[in-house]
Image (cartoon, rainbow, N blue to C red; front, side, top):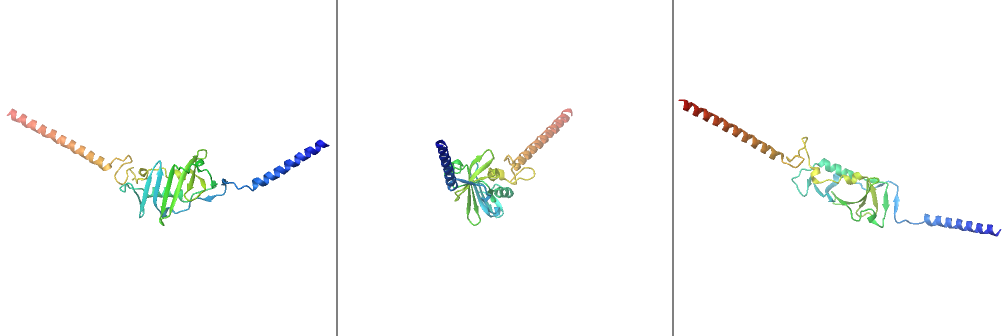
Length: 227
């Protein structure tokens, strides 16, 4: 009888602890909570962007001039505006269902020392700064954080990969693979090559004329000798 009472007391204590634990956990305020609702990370019109600065393993600085884009470091470079639009559209309306709210340790996601920083300046002079952190290799997605936003977002890789370009990747090309400034894809001057070929042709023609003159001279000497 005494043994049964002890067992009942132990079971009662366990029940009380379980109930208390449930209420404690359900009322805890987690500092890092990952939401599963879809949220809008960025929302802007690509046509409103007037300047693009990308810093990291590849650097880009583009400035909008009317309806076209220029490379701020080399304004003679002919930038393909359609390629720039594609790049901007990849970041214009980013949404995700993976949000880490107010993380205490940003180094877990790599946004404290970003591998790439994308700064977009709008026509109203406001800026959007995207800091690119670590890649989740299993899903191929990237952690990003917006300047002024304490949350960290896990977004599709296309958002980041669209900016993995150099200014040379954005050069406008014609159907023959030459850029509109007269350079081929490798950077060689087409006009320079054409001039070289023309010079070689002229040189060949001069050599032919010289041979013909020598032949006429020899024939003249032969006739003179026979007389």
